[in-house]
Length: 479
Image 1 (spheres, rainbow, N blue to C red):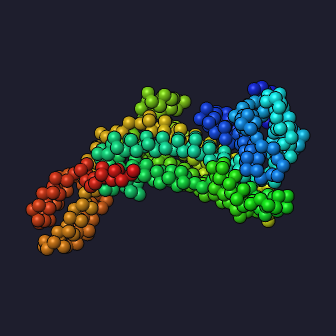
Image 2: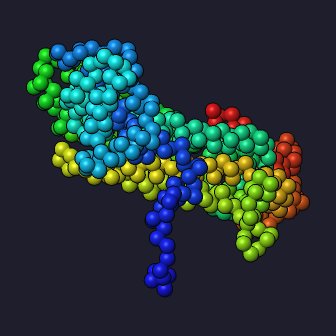
Image 3: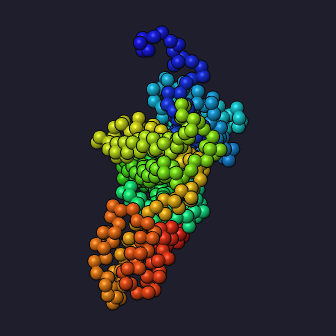
C-alpha cells in the first residue's frame, strides 16, 4: 500500500535531502571529513596536484624553452587551491557534464584560470602555459596522488585526533579508578578479581598500539605515465632524469615514492591502512560491548544529566545505553566497508581497470562511520559513573574466587617443604566448584590446612576486594 500511495517526491525537494545518514542525521559529526573525502575535496586536491606539477616542472627547468615563473604567478596558481569555493565546484561540475571525465574537467578549469591571469596580474606568461598543464600525466597520475593527499589529511587531521582523544579519556578513567576492585567474569562466570581501572587500561593499551601503527602509515604515490614506464616522458625530453623528477615531485607533495607500478599505484598501502583502522574499530567494538555489559550489571551507572536523553518510549524508568549501541553498529558498518576496500583495491586487471574509481569514492563513508562511533564512545564514556558499591557487593558475594589464591599458596608452601599440602586443586575444587562460599567458610578452610603461620596469616587477611594483585600497577605500562 505504501509503495503505491501518491506522495511528494522528496528527491525534488530543496534544499536537497541526504540519502545517507552521514550527510543527514549525523552530518555534524562527519562534517570535518567533507574537506577531504567529498567529491569537491577530491577535486580540490586534483587542482593542487596539477598546479604543483606545473610549478615543479618550470622551477626545475625540466622543459626546454618553457618560461620561468615569478612569485606573483606562483601565488596566483596556488590560490586556485586556497580559494577553491562554491563557484569553483559549480564550474567543474558544468565542465565535467561536457567532458564526461573528472580529471579532464580539472585540466580545462586550470587552463581557463591561466587565460584569466592577465586581468589579475597584468603582463604574465601564464596564458602561454596551456600545454604544460597535465603534461606527461595520465589521469591516474593525478588521481593516485590526490587520493593519497586527501586520505593522509583526513586521517591525520580528523580521524587520528578523534581516536587519540577517546583513547586519552579512556586512559584517564583507568587512572582515576586504578584501585577500584571488580569481580572479573571470565566466560561470564565469577573469576579472579581485578580493578575496573586495569580493565579500562587494557583497552587503552590495545587502542594505543593501533594508533601508533596508523601514525606510521606510508602514503605512497607515483607519477610515471600510462603504464608506469615513463615512456612519453623519455621520448619527449630524453635528456631529463625522469626517475629523479618523478621521485622529487612525489616527495615534494609529502608522500613516499612508488617507482614500480602499472598505470595505477597499486593501493597496497591503502589496504594496509584500512586493515589497521578496522582492527582499531574492532577493539573499540569490544570496549562498546563490554561497557554495555557493565551497564547491565550496574557496574557502570549511567549519569542521567550527562546522557541527556530519553530511554524507552514507553518505559519511563529506562535509560538505554544508546551511545555504546550506536557505536557498535557504526563500527560494524565501518569495518565492512574497510574490509571491502582492502580486498578490492589490491587487484586491478592487467595494467589497469576502473574498479578502484568507484571503490575509492567510499573511503569517506568507511572513515565517517568510524568517526561517528568514536564520537558516541567518547560521549558514552563521559556519561557513566563507576558504581564501586555495586562491584564491592558482588565481590563480597563471591568468596569462592579466593580458591585460586589458596591453591597457589599451598603449592608454593609444598615446594618450600611444608607437609600436608597435597592435592591443592582437588581440595579447593571440592570446596568451591558450583558452591557459593562465605567469608567465614573460606577462613575456616584456610585455618584447617595446617599451612605455615605466615602464609596462613596472609591468606586470612585476603578478601575478594583485596585479591587484585598488582592490577593498579599494570596501568603504568600503558604509555
